[in-house]
Image: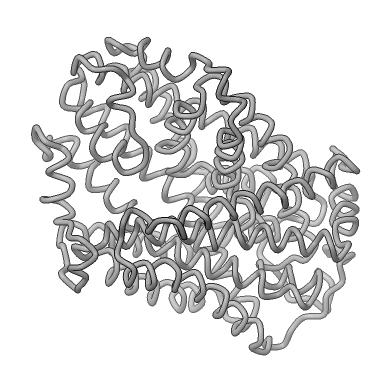
Length: 503
């Protein structure tokens, strides 16, 4: 790099970056959220708004994040500061969003790791729901909030944190990129095997019919289109700092838009593959139970830790299916958790000029302690549920809407467009700009709709005090802490030349 800028780590190749970026995008939501969202919003007809959302919001915003990170050669706070100093709080908002997500994402990985073992021994018996809630999680309601630790949850949670921090300490290429290039192929192999076995189960065709039979009338419902944009927005890891950070590690001459197209379509391809595998298995479950698919179809925790164990109990090669499914959750979650932590570590390194290893543990150890205190206890499940809902709305949607709006009104889009075009094979122009502007309106509508629903009725009927701490309070805290962090001085801030060249 030029002499006025600190040497920055880079991915060794475009291929290494793509593995890391796809690994970030392909996470738990691809496996346990997309299939049900598709089924619930018109089945095969949902593919139409889904593709429209991918092309008009997902890929354009992916390009925007790439341009921000690659042009600035910095983490999210530094990227926003270098496009406009007043925008630095947006970067810290991204960082704080990742702080919240990582502390609960790690515990879900711990559950998945435990269930990979449980699948081999059939630990959940004949009642997976009772086993999950009462035996494994020992779940209590929010009114019983306290430090009642659950050993079966605590051990795997600590293991996930230590394993992930060891990877992060090795750096961008030796840690982040190498882990992604190992875990992503393993994930694909395991999931393809899972899909292949699921398709051979009795009733698989019934599940696929339920998933893909189009209900074209659903396309007239605005909520279906909002669901499509929401799925694309959350699954591609856009607008909360991950792709800004990852693209800052790319070499100066990298085809940003070509890479973005590959990442976007790879993520969507995996989602469709997940839909096939999950609903083939649910079709088997429905036939075995003498029920309709809509009676067994679930998403999220209910799908992964209740419905799938039920399938495993009944299916031929059930234990093998269980290891493939929960192992896939572990690998998909690990690559995403790595990317989430990288946003935080990179920001700390940039602002305070701390070396990689101390920065990793300065960030990671306190987060591990908070994660254990909140989610290694009997009240971990309701806390996770509330924080996930509010951080998605006020950490991702709200921040994304405001920072994209700020870039539009400050007339920074042409700067980012020109940077994309200077290094990319696929050029962007007025259509890209129009799509980015359109996305502001879509995000504003999503934010309005979610806020209206949250104000009309307490989320999941949780008590006011509980939501005021882990919902509304946490959301306000994101903004307040972001502003405070942006006001702190930078240590030996580098001079920035957007046209800097590699030596």
